[in-house]
Image (tube, rainbow, N blue to C red; front, side, top):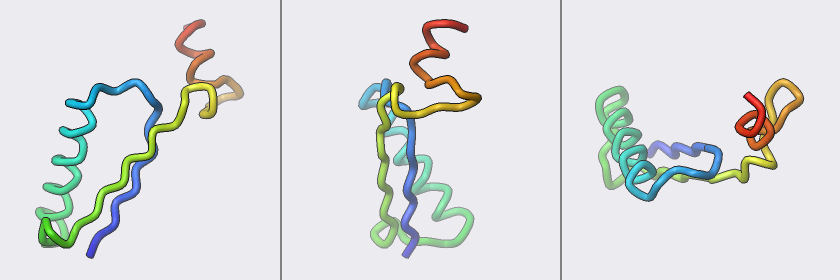
Amino acid sequence: MPLIDVSIAEGRSPEQLRALVSALHRAAEETVGALPQNTTVIIREVPATHWSRGDRTIAEARDQP
């Protein structure tokens, strides 16, 4: 029973998030033989102001490339 827990910066459309869920389910089926009904996917959307890399938040990086 795979549990796939993904953190991603906010800003994706519902369609993009749905496509991500489907792709993760397919990956679990294809790589470890997981049954779709036994696979759980959690997507955690993090505000861009709460995620940093290289001492800049994603929001800052978007504003100042």
